[in-house]
Length: 617
Ligand code: ADP
Image 1: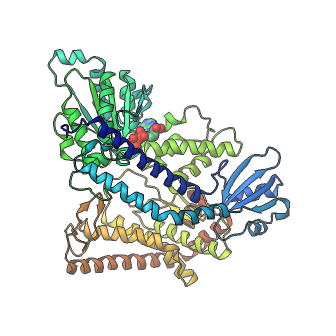
Image 2: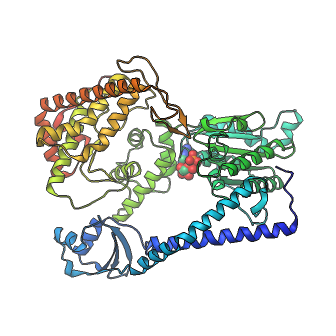
Image 3: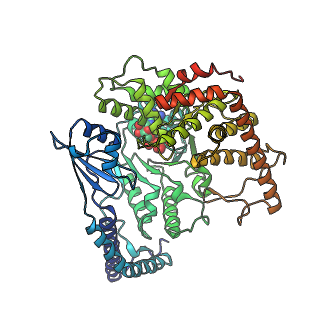
């Protein structure tokens, strides 16, 4: 691919022109879309609708402009604007009236959206043109792929297409991950005093792969390596390459490596490297295939071309090491692998401490409890949680962050923000029995984690939830525990049936969870009467293929046996849940009543009704 790197200058000009035409077209289409679809941009911060209602009640609101489901709210004394969202179909007037707020206290107006409708109709007239443009683009890409590689060779001429920075982050700012730090300190040493390594004839490191789930601090750690060594840090995300036109990715890689070498010793950081370094021959969906291959090849060429004097270290980060092209991890390329996992309890404690710095907390805030409560949280989740808690406390004009703020923030980070909406009494009753059902069934099954909190406050898509956060970092699940978890998931619907003698659609996601556990038990863990067999379907593009689909691995005969086993597990779990609920009907009623009164029950409130949990351990 280096042979046709140079082009005749007249041809280059023509290419440039074509390139501009395409860019202009894309720009125009994007603009049209933006204007027609986005309506007015959001102004101010988003607040829950309940806040708007209470502010109307206290007479603070001047006017509300209704823009579809969005409400733009302007306050009286300082002209501050915020926005809130309502359910579609609800009327603001009715929402206010239902909450005993007087709608005549504010001016309510409806935004005229005819302008954006006009754009939409214009867009539909222009659709054929856009399609033509798309076709043109495809043709150009094809030309690019079949040899005329630098048809859009803007790579070198663009100012800087990756970011350069000199991080001040140090290893001490990254909590936990001690193993990783130890392994990376050698790289720091090398960047600081490359001569020392050379004098002893050590092979100089070239590439390090940081492997781990999102938010565990891969980027932070890579930056800390640069910070510790005091060298510049060049970074780009693999996915950015995918948005580029053919040839630009490779050019950008060349450009980035050249700049890094000029500034050596230095670090190049490629985030989400699996999106370029994915095994060749696996992709191809939606184009971009040739682009990825060219970009990947260019990275390999650059890394192979390092001389011992280059002193550039390439750090790649990925959460899908299984998808990487083997060529990337060959000796002399990304041959070192540093694995980061989700933090354990001690690590969470130290991450929490780092992100608590500079924020005031009341003395009731207990770090140990917080760390215990946040099993499964990544470093990024913990950082978000503390930040959200500070925002919540500030919103309520508190002087310091309280445990309730942290609790709300933890839930928000994992489940999305609260959705205060007008619920009918029927809905609330249903939700209360449903959640009480989960809680009671879980409580009386010895292997299920203790109930932490039950609430019927709607959040995300759910009408309420019951939390059983894990009390330990488990790396294994037993069959008994899985079965008990399925029964607990069934507890909601079983309670609806038992008490209200009807069932609702609210159990859809419970059933999904239960079914997926049951399916894994049968197909992956050998935990059914079909015996010890793995029917894990082949993985393609990172997604599991459905059994029976082309490439799936089981026969249709086996598939119906699997379905039968799954059904047996689910039915057994459902009747188990019903038995427990019948036995503890009194407690079920009491928990549901309390939920209707208070909306949220903490573990202490729950234990006061049902008694202390008897666990299996
Ligand atoms: P990744 O690259 O693994 O997705 P990041 O390095 O981008 O994760 O982490 C995002 C944020 O989460 C960081 O900026 C930091 O605030 C926080 N964070 C993650 N891991 C840690 C950690 N081990 N110690 C302190 N903060 C962390």
